[in-house]
Image (cartoon, rainbow, N blue to C red):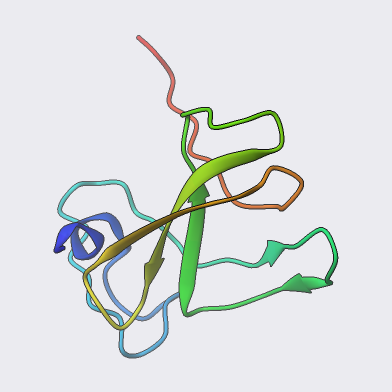
Length: 92
């Protein structure tokens, strides 16, 4: 219930003023827009949504999202045709 504050970029450069974050994990999650397959793109500085690497079904996948105003990490499932962020990690 406190992981979000460790994942988000600290400060208010990109996040809304109510941002609760210290970025102690080094992940530096940024808020961004997202695309829903039936709606226009939505830009925001309030939350960030990321796909996970787990598979759920052929049409849906798990995701997590972070809000500026709390330290929780929320999870859910949604259609893969929606546009959420991903985090690429280079293996060494």
